[in-house]
Image (cartoon, rainbow, N blue to C red; front, side):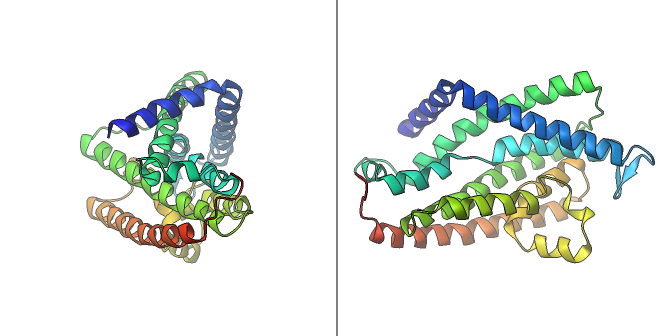
Length: 264
């Protein structure tokens, strides 16, 4: 376990080494937050409600999404595809380390750092915008929100890892990753609550794992679901983790048989 903690510390240090990329990434996220905030603020301004959400609820959803995006959406598994394509992946095969957990802890360091930044950004923005925010009063609901967020982070990592494994079969793995990330953000509820869509679209999205990345934890935070609905959602998250883990295992085994170390 100590070696993965070292990976965590190294990844943290490396992220801070490229300060321009770091600050540009946070600036983009902050612009995204401000844009969504004022869009939904003005949509609910007249009646005090929008699509079944009170103004305070829809704005809290936006703030919660900002935190969840920082915690869940990552890019270290994207680097996997580049490592496989340029041959540097070969070095990991001869090291006494599990590559899956190596990438996970490399990603975890960045997610923790970005989550901390997102908390600061929300505090500063809320202060200057005098934004209304719903704070959870129940430790039980807060614990369930933290649990669903942590599971969502691991679920996203598995999905991203699986897509990056396409690099074993194609040098153009970044194309599918771009389509994956674009569709994921739309269908996960990162732009808006999914229940403002038609009932048919909402049901179809709920059959996919993406809705359990952002939309589900955010609804848990808002207290829109009762305990058993939350338990059902967590169970669905667990089922998707199992299914995608099996797909990752199969893709990894078959991908290694195809890997030639090209580029080294």
